[in-house]
Image (cartoon, rainbow, N blue to C red; front, side, top):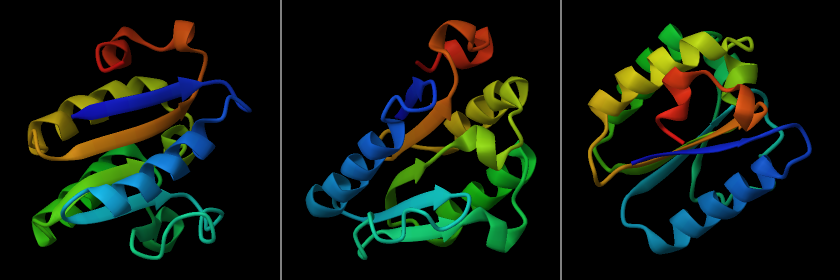
Length: 134
């Protein structure tokens, strides 16, 4: 299941994501991973969730992010929830590539996996390739 949290800056997307991560740690079976650019969520996310800084691994576009996420899933079948904060910041504000990423990642996840992504954008201006996941 892919869930997008879309809104302009200051909408409260990251706060919602933090709450969802911490809730998943308490309620879900399996591992929880949270991917972000930088380390701003270090003290907000439960220590039981795996917090990953994309800058440490040179992830800066959708192709490398896809490979990174696919590798995480392949190496740990116990991951049941993956959260990505500010995906457009990670991937240099490329909204067109975002639809391609969603199509590719939707092929890899199963119904038992939760995939939540925050997107800094006006929902009305999101490309059609992304809207189908909203």
